[in-house]
Length: 174
Image (cartoon, rainbow, N blue to C red; front, side):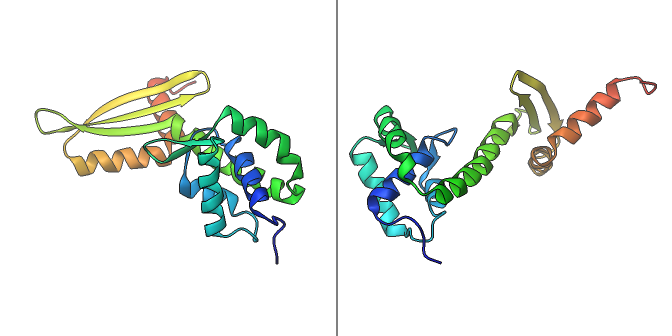
């Protein structure tokens, strides 16, 4: 099935549409994945358009390779986004919602591992919501493998851990 995007100008409009809606600066691969929502776009045209948008200061790219829309890009993108086919915008919006939900989750659920001077490890588990901290727990672990496994498991099911910890602190008759 052929796509709806017809030329490089429309690809640029699409990239600006996406860049204006991602919640955080995004790497090349993410912008590429979100832009490839239309079958008519290929990698090389995308790369050229992205580079042009940086060169014309519609986007910036930092030392970590993360792209951010500029005020100029936001203004020009907003003025042109209605020229994008509705079906393309719908697909983009769906993909952006998935990506932004993933970013929010990464911001809300964090775990880390650090070695202590005595050779053991500390695993730290943090859970936040829109209002702030919900849980910040540090546990001593005997080795790095155990600490990393606990940190990974926490990231997979933070709500389960939180609810089980709360249950341990509350009387059983409540």
